[in-house]
Length: 334
Image (cartoon, rainbow, N blue to C red):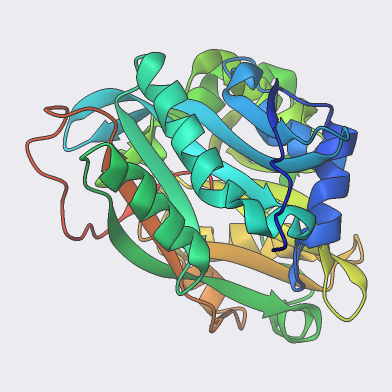
């Protein structure tokens, strides 16, 4: 009889991001972001974050075998505000597949969030992948429902098409976000998700980090008469496909009450600047909270891959009912 030895795995709170990056790079299948340490840090280390909600499982031999981060945020749903976590960066090493670490890691983190007093869980998964079943099993083990409340896709624009649609002069002037824009940026970003069914509650102490000091980030502002009226927040992310290239990812959009023509000119002016950085494509998540027609006008098209927004209560009685479907959400997608 071939008896496999029992392997013990230890929990490692907030493991070194070089180790986490190596785990992801060895196990994620292209096309995917190239999760280098500074890219992970841009999401995990904002001022109101809690890195102790990022946990790895380590083998007896010292190898990082699994990793999952629950990124804390306040979440507004149907007018009420909840203490929530966004689950991301879930990775299990193929070297330890027979140990069923996927289920163990998900349940470990669900229980950790419950013990810390969080109310809601949200995550983005790719439709049809095993992660969806793993999440369902973790919540079923605690007698809690989890639902995919919206299916959505990215819009993507390739450099050749976008540049061919940009005029020589978009007609507006944009500038980089500056530290003294912080108060106005807080207003704009707070307003951006006001009409969405689910929205992050923007924290004032996170604004400057999100828009200026994070690695790989640049933010452009549209200004009239000395007042910022709109902003676009862009992340420059390395992508592994047939080769490693750079894509621009539009992370936060806040265009206030700009007229349609001005929105189009603002987006066009920002695209003109970021294409000069050598990006191969620009990506925008289409989650229903803002007008994406200015991007479609520049040749952005819906990509095939379907993503799902998952929502679940972390304790009984938090929600009277988990909605079957929502029409819009305003969250970072990572």
